[in-house]
Image (cartoon, rainbow, N blue to C red):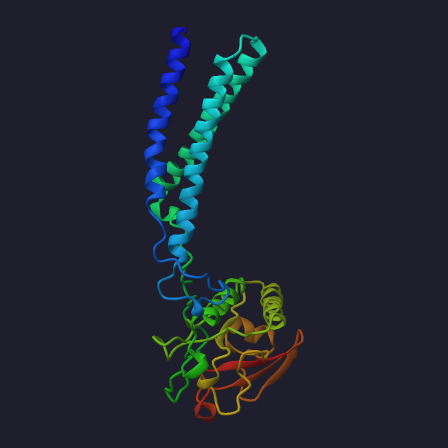
Length: 297
C-alpha cells in the first residue's frame, strides 16, 4: 500500500470524525413539542407554541446533515474504487467522484457558514413575520382616520391574523398611493385606517387616478387614503365596509386641481375615470374625518 493511498484513507477518516458528531447531535435533538400541523393559511388557528418554528429548522438541519453524510459516503466509495482497481480509467473515475463529493461538502458547509455570518436568524426559518404598517403624514387638511366625535374602532374593525395580513398586502400594492394611518388593532383603536376587503378593481382605479393626475398636473399627485373599511369609525349605515368599493381621499391641492375643483365646497360631485367623487367637510354629520373626497366606484 503506497503512501498516497494511506494519506487518502487518513483524510477520509478525519472527515468521518468531523461529520459524525454533528449527525449524532442532530439525531439526539428530537422535536419534543411537535403537534399536528395546522393550516398555514389561517395563523389564528395555530397554537401559540408555534411548533413549525422547531419543525422547519429541524428539517433544514437534517438536510444539511444528510448532505454531509452523503458526501462522506461518496468519498468512501470513490476511495475504494480508486484502491481496488489498476485500470487508469477506473482510478480517474474514483478520483473524480472524490473531488465532486468534497466540492459538494464544501459548498453545503460554506452556504451554512455564510448565512450564519450574515444573520443567524436566516437559519431559523421563522414564519412569524409581522408586517410593518404603512403610515404617512396627513396632507391637504385631512384630520386622519379618527372621526370628529373621537369614537374608537370596535368589533371586526380590530384586525388580527389573516385580516391584518390582508390589510398589509393591499398596502404593499398601492404603489405611490399613501395611507394616513396604520390599521386598527386592539392596541390601536383610534387614528387608524383599514384597507382589508377593498376590491382589487377599486385599487386599480385609484392607481390609474394617481398616474393620470400626475400626468395632468405635471407633478406628483397626492392621492392619500384617509378612510377605508373601518365601519365603526363612520356614521350608522355607512358604505365603508369590507367588500365595498368606497374610500375617502385627502383633499390635496393637486387632486383638487385634477378634478377641476381647486376650492371644493361641501357637496361638490365629480365623476372621472369610473369613480365618483363627493366632497365632504370635516365634522359633517358628527362622524366624518377631515375635509375629504368620498369616492365610490
